[in-house]
Image 1 (cartoon, one colour):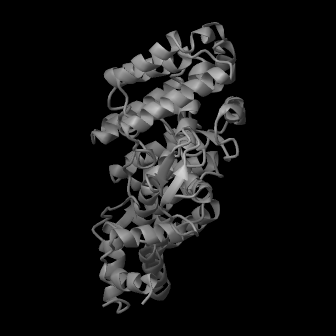
Image 2 (cartoon, one colour):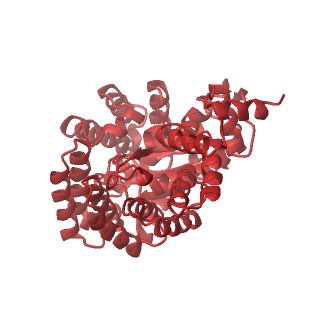
Image 3 (cartoon, rainbow, N blue to C red):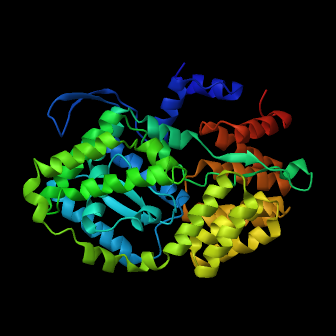
Length: 448
């Protein structure tokens, strides 16, 4: 009996082993998960890895669009995105793995973070962009992420972070008008994003990425103090606003020790770089459009923190302030819709979700949110149309199959709903949504 056959039987019993999950992960990226020794591009020593270079690239291709969309997509400012790409391009000739497909996105997320996928698909939130003060700090941030790619930290962790990204589908059960048929819907939570799944690196990994990033920084013609100032900013933010940086520090544990190491290297090994230009004027000029909406970003940050504390009226007030400042801000409209939905004010929430779709029709999250709201408003046909639109914008999201099943069930199309539920379960889903899907399939006689 093949592993796939055994897996099918265990899926029917809802008993997935860790080996099963790893097998599903390999299938999801179209390759078999490997484990073996490789030569470190950084040290030349043998390291144990769980992904080949091609698997790293495939994970980036398949998974980064979903994470970037969950973080509200690339900001609608080509100039800012192009500028960050230019800084990354300046660093790339100085890294060990020059052939990796590095790319950057400045994301609409308000929380303070940056992260990378294994092959160099990097996301930088607008929340951190408005805290940086010069180009050398941005280069230090990107250099640190490139350090993770070049040391193959994700591969050394055997793809566990990407497995989590595939297997975890954030869904919850929300009652609407007491009708259990309309209960399953997309969760309103997750305000600080899911990027902690991408990079729960060890402290040794972080130290190595710091060292590599600072080296790339200097080789590219920046002062080594850019890394020092970046660390100082993050340490200060951690102490003054710990809630805002919760995700940043779960994925990138910060410490005074790392700050002191960066400072020591800047003052000794890289002392000659002290006179290199930090690029403050260029950075301020090229990021001016983001800085103009910093009050909006700050208000969204405060609203997200309030939502995480379940202080929904306070959160709503913050999002209202954000929208007064920048009415056509896509992230603020999405967050307001989520905040209102959490208060069961679904019709009002739908207006903001519709506005978000009009503002940024190429970004998928507002379509998915709109589908969830329409399910709550007993409009399964409208929800299904939104889910089809979401699928066109961002195919391959496992949660979409579940929501399509819910919509089709509400439309009275049991057979089509069963196909979607079965497909959802075959992707290795767990949690409340998987329990609901399995329960429906059992009730309809498709599972025993």
